[in-house]
Amino acid sequence: MDATETISTFTDFFVSRGHRLLAGRTLLPQPGDPVLFTSAGMHPLTPFLAGAPHPLGRRLTGVQRCLRTTDLEEVGDQSHLTVFQMLGSWSLGDYDGPQSLRWGMELICDHFGLNPELLHATVFDGNGPVGPDAEALQTWEDLGLPVELLKDNWWSNGPTGPCGPDSEIFAWTGDGPPSGRPSTDPRWVELWNHVTMRYLREPDGSLSPLPRPVVDTGMGLERLLMVAQQVGSVFETDLFAPWIAVLPGLWQPGERSLRILTDHLRSSVVVIADGVRPSSTGRGYVLRRLVRRSLTALWSGCDGPAGWGGGEDSLTLGDLPSDLIADTGERFGLAADPAVVRGVLLSEERKFAGLVRRGRSVLARLYPSGRLTEDDYEFLRDTHGLPRELVAELANPQRS
Ligand code: GLY
Image (cartoon, rainbow, N blue to C red; front, side):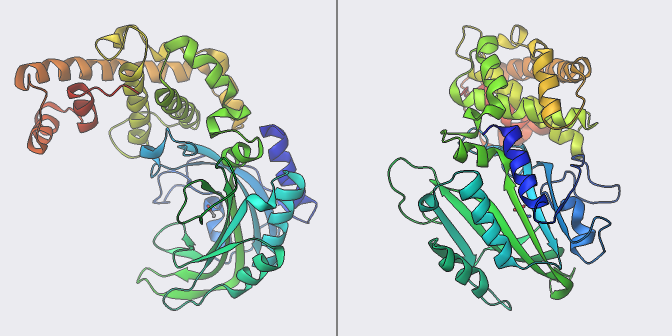
């Protein structure tokens, strides 16, 4: 099943069980929201999770584009991404958590073909004023899944707001039979989170009851594809095939650089198409970091003759093909104008190339040995405007 069929199988499953389909929203939360980007499928639904009646009713489903910067350093591994699509289902005071778990199990095993023997559940073990989630534990036992009880299975989308115990479904991605538990073996990959929200976290940290209990679930599309298509990383799924087919021919990046370039540039296309432009603060700064990290991967990690030693003049984001940009936009339901996207990337590239040239000459003059202390990094940042990441890379280029 490819990405398009996977999305429709998910939403059709819930629609046939009385859910209404929500349109995916922009990455940018409503004005006044302190959060920079939507980072979970439930984010646009926050007022409805907290008790407001939703115009489409009490059972909802949809797919929402999300952006997480907390995982930026992990991008390059098997499954972490910056921009991704989250498949979600919600019960606003309708069915309960166990029903959601039963449907979840039915969908991933009977419709997506996952082997139940390669699944593991985790359940909230109780913490502070809230006791263990006995209903979830009983449900997984009835469904025959091994369970790990964990104190930190508690989900919220920020310091205040709706929250509650969660139960996570993990899939085994190792070779050979499963071993260990989700908390002890990273080959268990988190797939789908079912949160039973019963509480509102108040600004003083206390919990008050929600007017009605809510079930909020979120599953990353890319991870589901990785597991269902039985490939070694999200980058080997059909979703990333256009990027993985094109970038090696353009730039010959090493494996890790290829993943970073794919994630960061794909994310940049979506963020630009959602209207963000690079700047030194807020959302624009997130975009700037994505583009600069892409350029660092491009200029430092390429296996071709023009690497970090001066390749910034010949390896350029301006070579990104128009159809790759347009196809990426379409997959997120966005009209990404290739000329606009390329213009934004190129303007940022010119600024960064200037910084690299300046950084290289300052480093050669002040630190010819290439050895720098923390004070040196601070001095270079404060006096010469050279970010730590860039200085570290110029002083000690990593090839990936
Ligand atoms: N709201 C559930 C999740 O994002 O994991």
